[in-house]
Amino acid sequence: MKRPIAFHTSGTGYFEDFEVGARMRHARRTTISEGESHLLTKLVMNTADGHFNAEKFPKGGPFPNQLVFGLLTGSLVIGLATQDTAEQALAEVRLDGLRFLSPVVPGDTLSAYTEVIGIRDAEREDAGIVRFKHWGLKQDDTLVFEGEREVLLKRRSHWANR
Image (cartoon, rainbow, N blue to C red; front, side, top):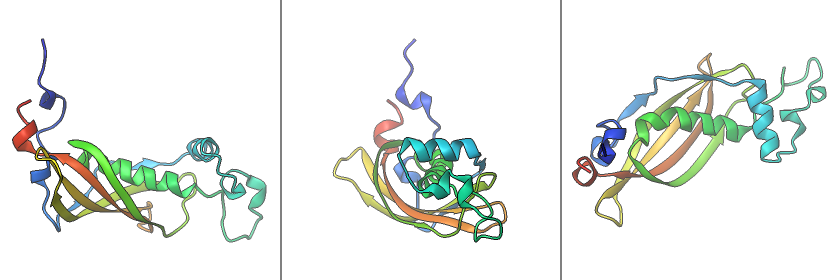
């Protein structure tokens, strides 16, 4: 039995569902392990010792532990937001304004928050573009990441019954 495309996603998250000024606290959180941090750092060939060399952290230094690679922090925050912001995505259009505001170390737990900061028509009639601002916080509510992202989202009027 062939099911419609819309069967595989929720009934929300279409372009029409977003309003400028809407804010979201995303339900899921994630704890970063040392293994995740080391793996991504090495997969992207980041050569900054502070991400994987324990000898670079003398006792009494500015950081108590190895630092998580910033792009892993940003990726996890955006990933936590994706269920609420991109389930009906056709494409990721833009990612900019990335700021890494405080250190993250293995064992920290991240949560994500989002605000809709822009909505505009796309060059195609079956979709529109939504601009989001994302924030990531550690378990102690320290702000560690912020960035903006644009997503090309399906319009319900064109996709909901396919």
